[in-house]
Image (cartoon, helix red, strand yellow):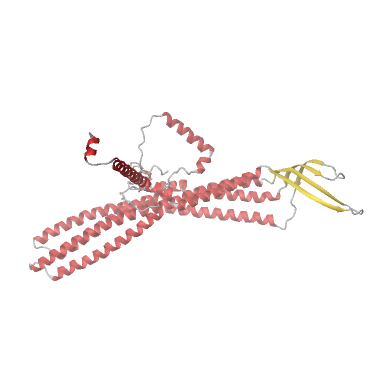
Length: 493
C-alpha cells in the first residue's frame, strides 16, 4: 500500500533513492548535533553554589597551591638525594689507546691497548654527616609539607572573603536597585502631589537628591561586584555562579579564649613548620661538626687490560682497599661552617618564638572579633526591625498630618542604612568565623594529593586499617553529583 501511494504521487526509483539519502543525511546531522550538545554539556564546568564546593574547587584549581606542591616535591627529592649517600657508588669504564713507536731500523710498530672494568666504592663512616643530613632533609620535607598547608590556609581564607564579597555585593545591588525604583516612583508621586497642592518643591528636591545618591551608590555596588568577581575567578578558576549563604561551622568554636589559643598552638601549620625547621637546624649543626671526624671509604676495582703487542701481555686486576682520612687543617673553614650553622639555628629559634607569640595573639583576636561580629549581626537585625516599624509609623502619622513628607524620606534612608548594615554584618560574621578557623590552623581541605601522609608507613597502616574496618560495616549508597551543603566542612580538621 505504501508502494502504491508513492507511485501515485509520482516518485520515481531515482527520486526514491535521493529521498532516502536525504533522510539518512538529516539523521546523521541530527545525531552529530546531539553528540555536540552532549559534549558541550559534559565539558561545561560545574559552578559551585555553596561555600564547601568552592573550597574544594580552590584546592583543586588554584595555581599557587599547585606551585607550593611542586616546592614540596623538591624537598622530597632532596630527601631521596640525602638517602642516596648511604648507597654504594658503582661505575663502569672502558678505554682504548694506540701507541705508535718508530724503531732505529726505520720500522714503525703500533700497539693497541684496551682496558675496561668496574669500580665500586662505599663510604663506611664520615663523622655521622650522612645520617644527620638525612634526618635534616626529612625535617625540611616535613616543614615544607606544613608550609603547603599554611599557604593552603591563607588561600582558602582569601577565597572565603571573595565568596562573601560577591554574595554581599549582589544583595547590595538588589537592595539599592529596589531603592532607586522606589525613589523614582516617589518622585512621580511627589510631582503629582505638588500639582495637587499637597507638597512643595522642597519635597521634590529632597527626593531627587536622594535618587541621585542612590544611583551613584548602585554604580558603586556594581563596581564592588566586578572586583569581587575578579578575585573569585582568580582564586577558584571560574566566574561565580548563583551563591547561597553558607552554614556557620560553629561546632569548631572553642568554649573560651584560652581554648582557642591552645588549639592554635597545637594545630597551626605555620608553627608546625617552624618546629620542623628547628629540628632541621639542630641536625645541620651536628652535620657541620661531623666534618672534624675521620672518614672511612671502602673501594673495590676489577679491570681487564688487552694489548695487541707481543711484548705486553694481557692482564686482569682485582683490588680492594680501605682508606682512612683525617682532616688536620683547612684554614678554619670547618669552624666557620659550624659557627654558621649555630647562628642559623639561633635565628630559627628566635623566629619560632616570635611566630608563637603572633599566633597566640592572632587566635585570641580572631575569636573575640567573631564574638563581636555575631553581636553586630544581631544588633543589625534588630535595627532593621526597628527602622521598618519606624517607617510604618511615620507613614501613618504623615497621613494624619502629624509628620511631613521629609520625615518619610529620612525614615526610608534609615531603613536602607540598616539593611545595608545587616548585609555587611552577615558577611562579616562568616568571614570572622573562617578567620578564626584559619588563625587556629583548622581551615584546610584534605585532598588526594597528600603525598606526605601517603608516604608515611605508620599513617598508611592506620588508614588501611580504618578502611578495612569501614568496609565491614554496611553503608548507604552514595549519591553522585556535587557535594551537598549538609555537612560542608567535613574537609576541615
